[in-house]
Amino acid sequence: MKHKYRNYYFPVLICIFFCLCIFLVRHAFSVRTQTNASLPVTEVKQSFSFLNTIDSELSELCDGDLNNTAFFQELENRTNIHIDWITSLSNLQIQNRFEQNSDSVPDLIGAGNFSSIYGNISADDAIAHGDICDLTELVPKYAPNYYKIIQQRDIKDIAYTDSGRIAAVYSIKQNSQKPWCGLQIRKDWLDELGLEIPVTYDDWETVLTAFKEKKGATAPLWISYDAYAQDESLNAGFGVSYDFFQMDGKVFYGPARQGWKDYLTLMNRWYQKGLIDVDYMTGNSTYADSKMIASGTSGAWFGMYTMPSDLSAKDQNIKVIAVSPPKLNEYDTLHIQKKYSISDNMFYISSGCEHPEIVLKWIDYLFSDEGSRFASYGTEGKTYTLDKDQNPVFTDLILHNSDGLTFYQALKNYTLAPGLPSAYIDWKRELQCVPPSSAVMCDVWASTDTSYMLPVSLSFTSEERTRLSQIMANVNSCMYEYTTAFITGIKSFDNYEEYLNTLKKNKIDEAVQIYQNAYDRYLAKHSS
Image 1 (cartoon, rainbow, N blue to C red):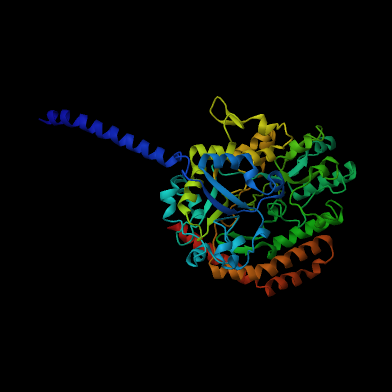
Image 2: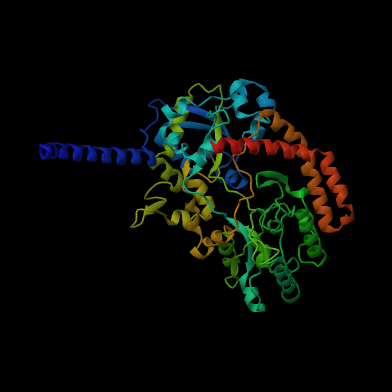
């Protein structure tokens, strides 16, 4: 009898097992992949106004109207949605939430962050005030591809407000991006002078001195106009950020710490020795100019991974390598480095938009398999082909444009330009413009961890945001002025207590506490 039941149930159990396997596979597949949207989005053409500022290069390329780019022309053909672009804030009277004049508010508003458009109120408050649409119920229904993507934990922190609402549609990177800029040095000079790659600050001083004395470099180390907007690369070795950071759960303001004074003391010594540009503060860029490097003015600088390609076009004898941030001691571990978010810009839908559901269907196409590839690489057969592994490879229309467009100009014309909202973007597309030896630079810069950095998704209440804005306007001005004065020697370090007292008078301790409260909320949220 026992064998009889065993023979009876065995086939049944096998069937149940296989059905369960099929269910799990289908479920996993549905979570990890996107569906392709039904095109066109609407049979009757719809138009929406979209405010999003663009950089000067893109503005010149499209004459201020993104509809003049090949990408947005093709997107309109596919979706039947027309966008009336507003690419300059001067086109609108944007003040006090557009002066609460609903007639002047565009349907869609693109931004790097919420406060850049709406000031110090939070996204939750903007929804409560009726300024923007609450997309929480609409996104799952009308933007299912986007909805699936933002369920990932690291993205969910960014895509949802503190109250659990969806207030905007973010541009999301398909993979975490490594640092794409950092310190670089002329390897050909190091080899010629018999010098090793510098590791410590003392090593750097030796190398920079040799560049000055033996290569005639008048600014051996190029630094940015403020001496710190370089992704923490020069100050990290002193264990401080130029902004707020944390250690063991406690928040600090870097420029009020001893490490900041030590950093400024070093920079002052290098300034007095002529190892950095005496007029560095008159510049206006975070990145070094390739012309300055090619001329031999500088031998080390802060730049992007595209710099070697830019320089080789001017002089093929110039050899450039990436270098890690300097340390006090060779075997120190650094914990300060800019965090790169997996999201870029976003856009909000204003409450005056008549058809937010159509907008969501339109943008959801760029989060589908087909649409995300279109946003990242353009049109198959025209701007890219597929290699043997079915990976997109740009054609010469992008890589060697016959109309004289640079790689990035072509990218901005034929694909969704970097930084524009919103799509599911493969950022690795940008690596196709540089040789593998340049792409490896990102790995060198990623050698520093970010364990002391605050989360990029740290959020504040409207009251906290308003108070921080008031405090930090004075604090930032004070920090910049004193930093420049100490480096250049205008102020003696005997006046350093005066600087710290000025920070305190400007309520830096209150700002630290606001950040501490926000960080405590973040930790509590993620401990559950």
